[in-house]
Length: 79
Image (cartoon, rainbow, N blue to C red; front, top):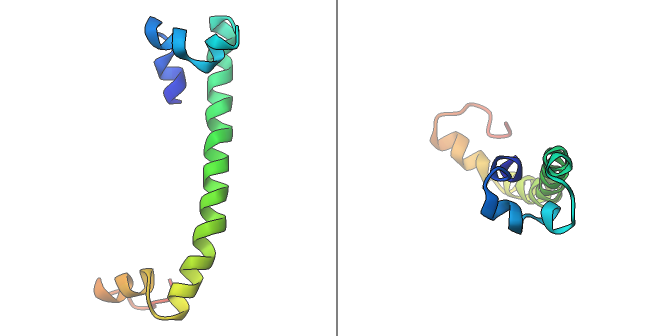
């Protein structure tokens, strides 16, 4: 979405990857949301792959977000 919001600025359009690839403005505006969606999906997937095992290990040891829940008065440390 940031790329889409940045497109109207002439200086950023010149430097934008879609413009460098030779895409006309209309095509670049259509491609930007799709590219951002894919980028966000990849980041979320990598985040989940890395953080889920780490969180599980910390929770099993009574650390991580389980500790935060106890400190803030949460009932069940596993949630």
